[in-house]
Length: 299
Image (cartoon, rainbow, N blue to C red):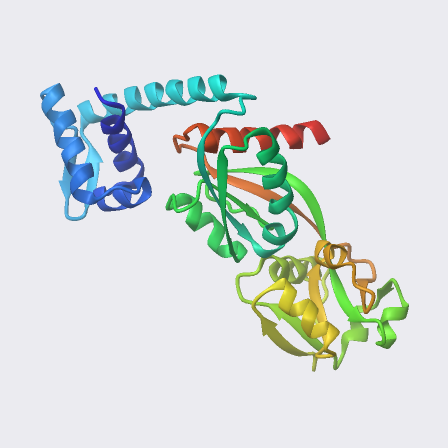
């Protein structure tokens, strides 16, 4: 039995659809169908039942899927073992990251990884936190980084580092004189948010809700599409931004102060995210192992 045929069967069993499985594997639907037919011919039995656009394993198919998972897992473990610590790993690792880790964490990780694996090319796409899980599950990315964990059990989350959400206030603003302010002090202020789907915005609002607090009535808001845009708007005097502390530290700004909300520490993890059941080649396995090893070393 060919590895690519077993991979196709496992992907269809996980996705419940030949079309979705083909997309996740980066193959055409006819190619996946041919691989499944070849496997069924080789084994002399039907492995899938097809209903409409869906596909489910037959009883023999379930046994072959279990076999496929064991064999593919063994192959992946062997590849990871052979490549562990080897600078000869070659290929591409596709990374999707939300803005904060994409701007202030992933570049450092990729640079340090490249020191150990110079023949691996990292392709990094920056999206919002809400888009990261879908990109990983659709296998448009091998690994993701986000400011929020997703409850989907198909995903593994590894906490890489911590982050703090603060108010970015122009140095000339009266509120900049204090390290922290009462939430009521924001009444009537123009607040600058990230776009809908931003983990930074959601973490901030959930922290206030957990503390039984609401934004003061009359707080005017604007929404911008990136952390850099929010910081630039604060510098231009548009208002007060809600941003990651890492963004301010990363820019070493003299004209913007970090101010906290009295009694409401707003901290979160930045997570590495990958699919639990995905079969990874040398570059992807090496990258995940490298980042996990860094996290373990810090602990």
